[in-house]
Image (tube, rainbow, N blue to C red; front, top):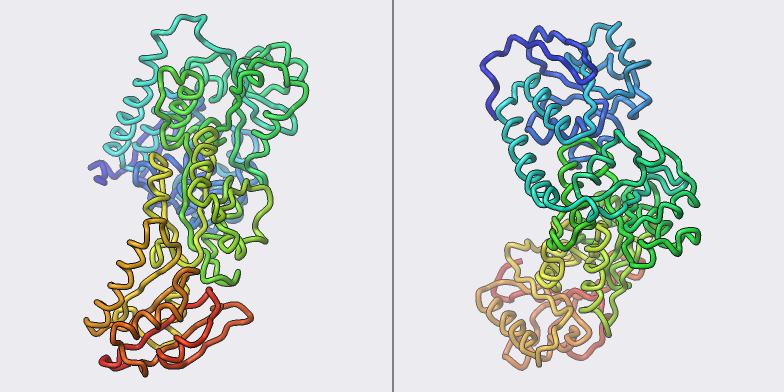
Amino acid sequence: MKLDSNQTGCQITDQAGRRINLKTMPKRIISLAPSLTEIVYAMGADNLLCGVTEYCDYPPEARNKPWVGGYSTVDIGQIGKIQPDLILTGQIHLKAVIPQLEALGYPVLVLEPSTIEGLLATIRIIGKCTGRQEAAEDLVRSLQRRAGFVTAKIDLLPTESRPKVYILHECETWKTFGSETIGDTLVHLAGGYNIGRDFGSYYPYPTKEAIKLKNPEIIIAETGYGDNPQEPLSVALNEPTLAQVTARQTGQVFGIHSDLVSRAGPRMVDGLECLACLIHPELFPQKPSACRGKVYIAGVGPGSAEWVSPQVQNLVAKADILVGWEQDLKPVRSLIKNQKIFLQEACNYLEIPKQAALEAQKNGGTVVVLKTGDPLVAPAGINGIANTFGGFEIEVVPGISSVQMAAAKACLSLYDAAVITYHPLPHDGGKDLRKKRKRMLSALSWGLHLIVLTGVRQMPDDTALYLLGKGIAADSPVLICENLTYPNEKITACSLSEVAQRKFDWLSVMVIFNRYTSH
């Protein structure tokens, strides 16, 4: 991104009406609000961020920045160690935190938008004080275009077409969005009437009986936070007091990720798009990806829990939905608490991901599809998963594969080997099986070793019998790796003919050394 030519500083009026003089363009910025952290990242100024709060978790890279405490519990001492030349704060910091920071000589900006217009103004202010004005204007134009697309349709609706909407902001207390809040603004722009404003401004605490009397036509629960991310949705769906309200009777109870309607960052427009789809599906039938949630296809290692990467552990712990076979779930069982599990079995393994996709489309949950090993080494239907979750944002998270483990046991480079995986096998009349068997012969003819992942319909003895029948030497050396990384791991060195006469565990990796290649 280009910096403005004026690097000598600027004068800025923040959103609390305070005028701040920056003598030089800041090079070390601390953000004390997750929404402001998101804005800094969105305009490409994250290299200037030298401190954030523990709640600054988006984008994920923000977690790697030094922490200076929580949102309301700021660590002044830690800020002193960083020595920033600009601190971005919210209204919550005005009374107690900002006087301390200014007493120490730090320039402080208060930025707290509650409307789309306020968000755009915040972006421009941060763009000005970071020298990213061009990037800020690009971001503003993009957000204006997207918001304008929604509001242009909503503005044509008659007033009576606005359904009554209740947003469950906090399920323990039934706190909701009153007037003068982000949630109230977004519901209005999305074509609904927020009944929370009838209970007061900011964040009122209506009783369940009061909500019942208002009879909301749509209930939207904020999800995605705490130890049980889907609990608010479950509460909204099952609270007996609300059993007869219109929203429950018509099935108009949805979940939406809290960040999209509670944070005054660029994703506020994602929240607007999602709410518009939920409130007026007749106008916005195609849900945006942010409303559908995100899908991770994650490798959980060769089998033992100790090989599950920290990244995958974190994904599983925070997931709303988990999809996988029992073997895939086994390494992460200790991390499963309140996640909804879609268990694949031989009788339903193709349908289960589709059911998970429908669930995530309705409620915008985060889905983690678990794959034993590394989904990039042994794809096992990765293209099919991507097609099932078409329209979702999809990310593949690698894992440690049993292929890599077997190569290490055999002292082989994967560069010198061909990897053939026989699980699972599609129901295609054996076409895939025949193709993979031919690939083994081709690889051997090219001078490559073979690393073969077995399957219930292609065990090591099946592979050995096939290769022997095609003229591969009976004394070709083989390494069979059973139950890699498990306590009962077993490594067997033998010949191809010996493999043909024995039975091995189906959790086996078979390494076939090419006799004409040194190893």
